Length: 129
Length: 98
Image (cartoon, rainbow over all chains, first blue to last red; front, side, top):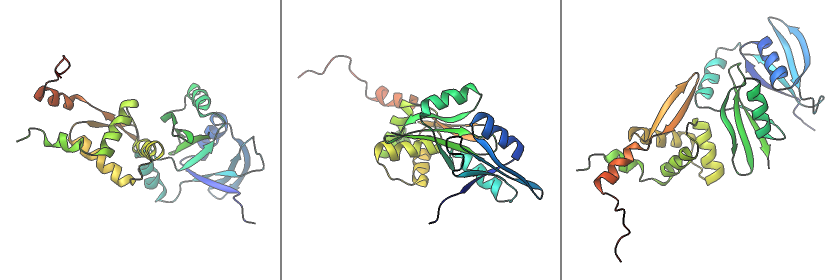
């Protein structure tokens, strides 16, 4: 049966991304091996250490940056993470200096918020009701 | 001749009025948040391009201003153009006579 094992975010700096995704968001480093000019660098959730890995992918391709900038200008998060309580998570992350473009907002079946990952992406946090 | 046809055109559309409702509830939203609110809370299935054009009409009428902050763009409501309506047709303080 096919399943998702890795999903990617394009980051402008892998070291900076690792710091943000582990120290602020709370992921755990899973794999870190040299791969040419860059690293094969993944994190996973402490809630599911052997679950889906997030690959912190270098934005080496020339199309990556314009793509990201266009999304960010319109406030569009390309990646979503689940949290138990968006309201509490927004407060916790704001306390760590994380910037939000959308505060926790009740969208009917789901509560969402959107944060800046400092690596060129907006990330949506979501709690299904 | 209306002095401000753009204003009446802008508020003559139900989707644009809903956008103004949502900006009244929370001022300063990205295009993504406005689209999300219209879809999830109002069941409006307009495309992102359509919402963007609605916002352009509201901006043309002076009811919405955009502000760039860093790499993001936020939309803010400005109700001051609506004053011209009540100046033109003043609202009586007393209830109307039966």
